[in-house]
Length: 430
Image (cartoon, rainbow, N blue to C red):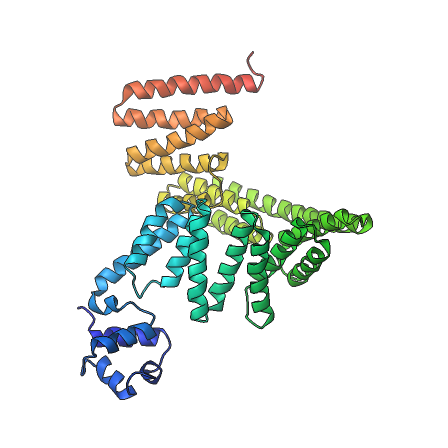
């Protein structure tokens, strides 16, 4: 059953934490809002428009059905998933469609921010800047300071990328002043804004100001788990002191940075050993225990800022789950792993190969062929002959299942050629 106009207004009001008095203020009496929500009275178009504005909702929502709105929520989730896997070009048209046909269940400011972020990551800096500035205006008008701080940092980073350092300083200082005036900010974002100010002043050769901001950023992070960022700040401080001619202090901060990175390496080594233990557990058939250990390793890697290792563990879990015939769960971990690997890397190729294996078992041989071919392209570019042998073997089996025997034979020939190169590389044959 479709929701009535009154039910829609009531549901949105409650979701946004407003009372009937809050919604009626400046418009009508609270009792009139009560009657409208009970479907005992129909608002005029002007009143409905005012109610929609107070609920931060396009008036069209009250004239469309719930099913359409849920479809838009689904589209937004897909767009966010594409962004998570760095497929920004594919996400842009979906987000633009949502912007043109908004839904109350999807925040318009979030959609606008996501569009700007997609433009940033696809190198469309002018479009990104225009979009972020529009989001900033909207956030300021609504006193949404959390979004405003995020946008100010992004605008600063965009300006820095374009070497427009005075404008970068303007945005980062504005964010810094908002925080100093009492606007709460997530610790990492706060420290990043301050560190960015240090970086831009260092770039301009204004070392005294750079030192001031680096120290402030370091003080913010002391006692936190952002070890890598602390190490980066110490390194920045050492470069700044070196360029100021204060070599003793430069050496001191270099040593601090070295100690941090050495500690990180020692911590990482401990987690690496634990992860290998989890992998062995999985390879001996103890899947549940293996996944528990490896998920614990991911959390520990996250605490010390080892993002790439998180992706590798997702990849390891996927491989173990494939061996245990848990294809659906393995596929989920493959998708998560891809978020951590850049295009053209061997790690990404391994994930493509595993996804191809899963699609082959599912019976989607076309998807399997495409994925394994992507893996082969990367392996070829790296001259990774051992991995090419495995990939061509898989692809040949898929072609046989498809009845494409000519292509299967070509895969066999390529596999043999890769095997010979692999042996030659290992000095087994001349």
